[in-house]
Every structure is written in C-alpha cells, then in structure tokens.
Length: 158
Picture 1 (tube, rainbow, N blue to C red):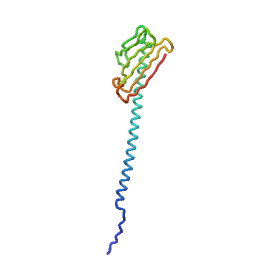
Picture 2: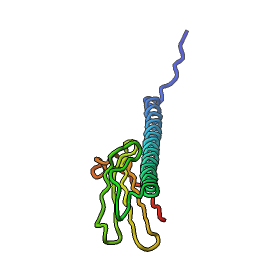
Picture 3: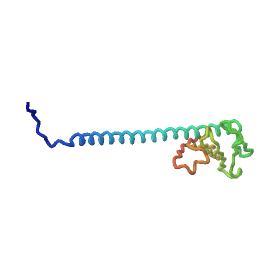
Picture 4: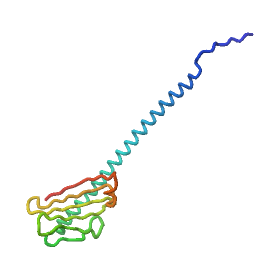
C-alpha cells in the first residue's frame, strides 16, 4: 500500500502571522478603551469637584446673607466678629476703614472641608450690599498650591 502525500506549499508561518495580526488588533482596541475610560474618569472628577466648589460658595454666600440680615455683622458702626457658619465657630471678619465707602468685610472658612472666601461690599448707592462668595474644591491651605483646584463663585446683591 502506497501512501499518498500531499505536496508541501509555502504556507509555513501563516498561523503565526494571523495570530500576531489578531493580537495587535485586540491590543490596540484595549488601549483605545483604556484611553476613553481614563478621559471619562477625569471628566467625571472635574464635574464632581466643580459641584463641591459651587456648594462651598453657596454655603458661604448664604451664611454672609444670614449674618448680615439677622445680626447686621457688616455694620458700619458696630461690625460683628467672630461669626459662626456651618458649625465653624470663631470665624474672624476683617474689614477696611469703616468711615470710607465702599467698605469691605472679608472672612474665610471651610464648609465640609472645602475652602470658601467671602467679600461683602457696603456702599451708599444701589445696590448697597454686594456679597461675593468664592468656593474652591480644595481645603484653604491647598488652594494656592494645587494645580487641580476649581473655583466657583456666587454673588448676591440687595
């Protein structure tokens, strides 16, 4: 009995070439998915930090409004200091010369660990009072040094 052999062709290495091609396609697809996921994480954390900064600014503006309307803390004749905001007692309020308008009152505190800086401007013309609260996505000690600090601001006039 004679065995019939099939002739050899030049297809050696075709399987390795096909495997390398498939592996490179899967690798490039994986790298693309990783890059998209990384960008989405950065975008999500930026949105979250922006909200933290806004909430800090809103909390600070509401605190200044409360203390000005209820206790007249930004009084030109008898300013109140210290004040309490968000369970932070002993917040010192600084001010400019009380005889020269506009008069500025400033204070800083950290609602829920995020920095908030408030400036209250008293004037003799309308709007007589401007409250500007700047909220940051970092504690006050890190605002100046952190490259990823976000700032949101709120202004109230009356």
